[in-house]
Image 1: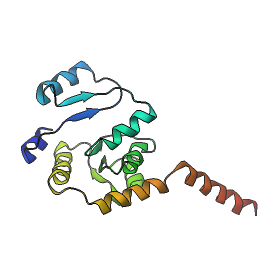
Image 2: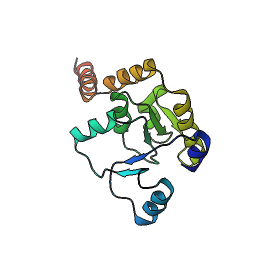
Image 3: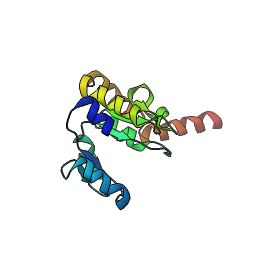
Length: 154
């Protein structure tokens, strides 16, 4: 975040969803970002989560390990630029429509965010990401499984 602040000189707010941060992480963040710069929302239900995603300027997923990458799909479905670590299943889920960084490199994350903040992301890109999210629905998954069984049983 220091690198991002230095690079862009743009104000930003970190909005977190999930379990509370440990005090040893939370306190330095609060002192660096200020009282307005960090918003902790805790856990959100599905309805709240949909509203949360659509309110974002950018979704950052800094995971080292991710089972499937549902947040990538949810961000794309909300037509929000998705910035994701390049590990685990995340690149497979986001394809070429998410922006990636090495989760061990804060400078790389800052660079990706600075580029989005200064250049923006086209509506066409966000619409393509939205279409990708639609193609990765549970219904599509079940249809694919059904097709496999049909082929095997025929």
